[in-house]
Image (cartoon, rainbow, N blue to C red; front, top):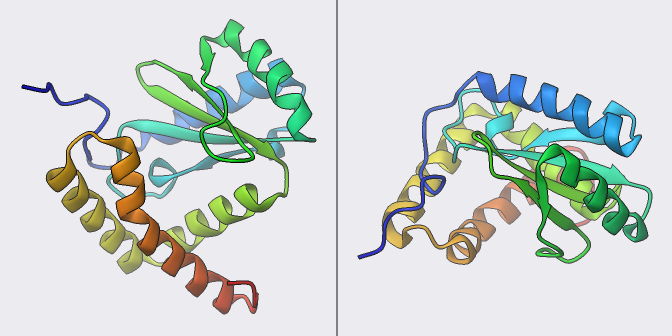
Length: 175
């Protein structure tokens, strides 16, 4: 019998997640030499009131992809483990915690950067959509268990629909 993964569960929103982000942002900015404005709190832990997996997601904007390996090496001193490219155009670096922190290195202002901020901001501004998203995440985990690829695939349609709504709301024709 598989033991459930401790991070693959949805918990009530913890206001402390914001403080974890602020502390990590300062440390990451200092080690990488990035302005704090290039380090963003993303994902469900960045949306007040939204239940989430107890993993703080952070996005750091690099100048270009060629900087990823250098940044990954520098982050080892903060306890981060470079897991390589898991999403095209990004570098996944995690810190076991607790709390666990997932750091996504990406090109500042690129597509990954823009879409993650757009999704986060839409959920922050649309509470009912955030609650629908939480219900979906709970249903997916209840049905699939701790299977990260299946969990991500099961949420993709919802995320893409929210991104389309967010783009339409700001007059962005890209869909």
